[in-house]
Length: 103
Image (cartoon, rainbow, N blue to C red; front, side):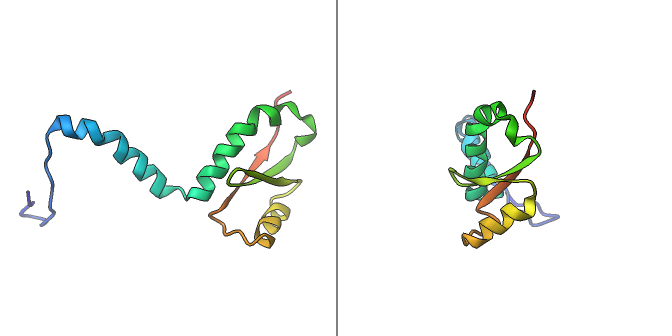
């Protein structure tokens, strides 16, 4: 269908078909917004979080991840960003997290 006022084109599909593909549309849209390297890095951080919460030495530290790998920890973001850039990583390939474990 075409909206005669805006010339916007719309595609109509049966509701049952839309229900079948809805989750694929939502997943694809989310993946397009977050770069794969960041998404994988965040998954690795969540994977390691229970272990990290046990380590009181990490209080006040920053942690960097590249995909499935923990790059390291440091007292400040700049040090970790520098380490990531020295590895040749782009800013959409790693993630940083400030870390304060729960007592």
